[in-house]
Image 1: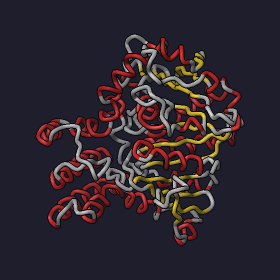
Image 2: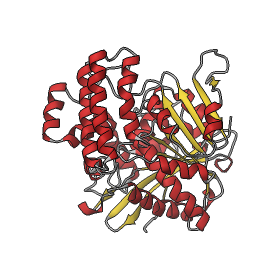
Image 3: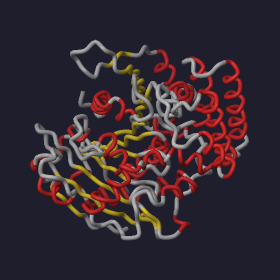
Image 4: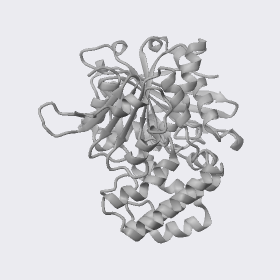
Length: 450
């Protein structure tokens, strides 16, 4: 394990100098609003993981009075320090302007580029990539143990893992291993819960629900519903037989059938139409390599040119510790490909273990998401063996308002004991991007601040 903390006060002058901004740009936060630290941890031989911490900047409270939230991105191969930070919940947006709904006002934020090879994380040899959830979780235990040992000020602060998409699957596995590590005394932290956002917990339940969901919102006709349902059944058959690599390729085929029948619906928000590649090109790519098509859709869009230029330009210069031969996102395709056999494996049983252990589990989902639609999430929740499920299921949900002065419903919530479910309205796959105020309110509710 290697770690040598670098610290940077968030001063206007520092941002102006290191990020190369004009003096007229309104981008910096006041000096008293905290600091940032970042570094690498060598989690295995030839495997180096990058993390970036922002101390909370609440004007009325010290960071020690607020929780610590770790954010995990999806993909796998999507960068938390890039996309989650600058596109969703960090202090600055991708134009380096202050984000009004940043979570930093209510929590310290820890962004980690995982699995190794994601974002600024990197491997020295091709056999060092993670190939399954167990390795992903094991790597994170090394990072968290090192982090909390070196930052003892966070050992007693409530620590939550928030996640999105494939990050939710990783959060479940990491959460269970962290719970065990805390009980065994190998990691000293106040682990308070996991939040699974639009999460790939049971991939086959998502795929099976695509047809009915799209049909219900007039994005499939009768024939389209038949075609999507047929390929979904093929995915189910492969999963039931334990043929997970085949199931991954069939998942890619199912997405193409959806695209062809919906005139290219956006998997991340059904009200828009946006695809990474043209239908013709994607069809050609699929015949050559299913994983190329899947990578283009589920990871490449998290590294669009503007964000990539920001991370490999001004941010890289600011951080000063990125190796010369490492580019942000440069190894993400390999990260995605190495996890091929893990994509379609369900982790419902891990969520069950978390619940039975008493760990707080929050599930939240965007109303307009397709890739991990709410119907699919509800389907796997019904499969939980958790003893509190019957009582949870019988509860009526309650409306949530992000603006107390408005009568517009922002979400619905159902909560029983240590399980909560948020239905976030008017949001797609990236909830904080689409509904920043509601996402911030949800985080505050989950961390018991509202």
